[in-house]
Length: 383
Image 1 (cartoon, rainbow, N blue to C red):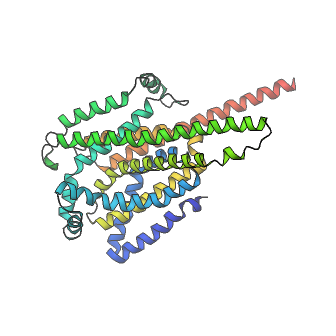
Image 2 (image 1 turned 90 degrees about the vertical axis):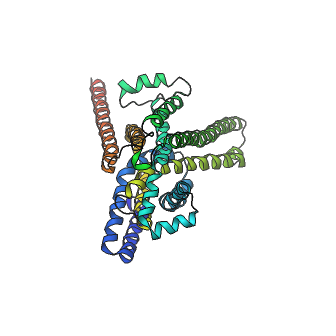
Image 3 (image 1 turned 180 degrees about the vertical axis):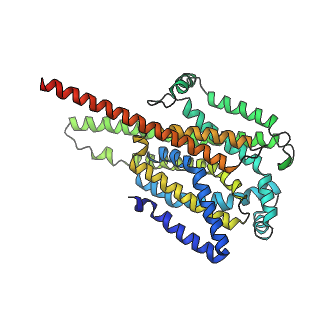
């Protein structure tokens, strides 16, 4: 199963490193390898979050995520997106932006860096909404019960996550974004607008995908009720199982959930794209290295889904969402202050590793309790 899931990633790694060696020599190959490791370390929490969503989708959409989704991630977010950002912020055409990226990499890097406040505000608020909506929802399993129980009660207040996000955005735009020397001065208006766009994007994409998911669940419940009625009447329940409307509705639900996944991936990729310029400012080395890393993240996502890891280790999603919350705050802080990518990556890894270990301890405790119950049952039956 491991080879089947990660086979494409292994193959692309070999081809990508070989191509880097041919085009840029051993130094270029090393840079691409380092960028791949950087992307994986920064985005491991992304894989856990994606797995929580992808497990609701069928095998077809999982394949779409691994194929079309990879093309969007590699060519869209790691190559095209920085060029579009440069074109917008520098007020030049995309063609001119490509010329700048190829002919004047140093200027291209400075233009992307200048656009960082807008990127960080958009991605930071989007990720913050994911974290807040998770932490304010009552859940069967609670990792940090002392914190999550009172927050779940607060979550009964409508739109609380939106209010908190907007309040934090206002504070950020009026403090961190007012005097950003290394990004071109006052960026308060840019940060405020970008953060609002991030919030609106989350509400629209998440709301539409949630709407179709709810509709799909309602449709499934109606089909089950119809099947029960038809079975009681002696009629074969084939019609409900193969109805065109149910198939169409499932397709729409999966499509919008796929879009939601891609927006999440985009938000996660912001810090990786910006941080990669500390290693190289060659856009093709960036795209190749980060693209290889993105492929592993997608393979890891599918692996987690097929192994049922999130069901076995129930606190993993908690750790990933806490990592998201930390990343959101870090992105907003980087509007004014520079934070090393190693710190960003370590925060996520530590939180996920801790939640994994907590899950292991929980499973062992439940296993011991089950064994003790069985022993008592055997003693009782023996008596």
